[in-house]
Length: 214
Ligand code: AP5
Ligand code: ZN
Image (cartoon, rainbow, N blue to C red; front, side, top):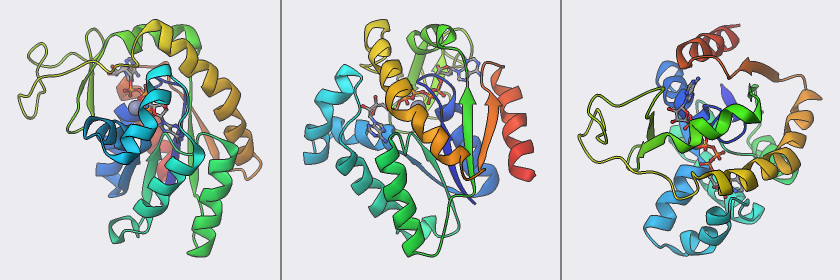
């Protein structure tokens, strides 16, 4: 299966994607995680992406299309993948289609994480992540076993630089203006399944399973 997760910041894409990856043996590609790793390592990609990310704006289509183009050609992604955070513009969606077409493949499903903006600030400002794995926790909704520490590795958790109310506002604007049209783009192909992303994580997981087993 070739899947796309679309939803606003804090809608739960990164929470559900490791579960999907594990249950369906898909390769998991999150452009946000890849970009944050590049920023931390100060690679040329990271240096180019940092300013836009800090402001909550999208980085250029060319940069992220390059990341995905390289990644989906890897043998690990032959059987299928789950894309978290890509495509986020119609141009990115068109480029992805062209890449897949040249391999004789196509997108099977787009999971749309539907949720009202008002719920997202509490989710974003309470989030703690383990940078190495991308695992995320929430101070109130999904606390780690020991406060401030990753359950699996015991390493410290951090907060993302863009996880504050002011930057969230720009991220939401970018979502409504640039990414919502991507949902319409896939609606036309009848591949979109709508999830109730405001529900608790386990119920969202159940919805994901029922969509993917259909
Ligand atoms: P990215 O990393 O993709 O961030 P985002 O889209 O803003 O999404 P988030 O990671 O904030 O939300 P999520 O849906 O994964 O939420 P999570 O599951 O963690 O992108 C960051 C930046 O990189 C962009 O702003 C842009 O600059 C750049 N970028 C990336 N891709 C790009 C692209 N394709 N083109 C251009 N630029 C790009 O959940 C959030 C919190 O809520 C967590 O604490 C979690 O524990 C909790 N939670 C999750 N689900 C539930 C639930 N059901 N109930 C209660 N709490 C929950
Ligand atoms: Zn995420």
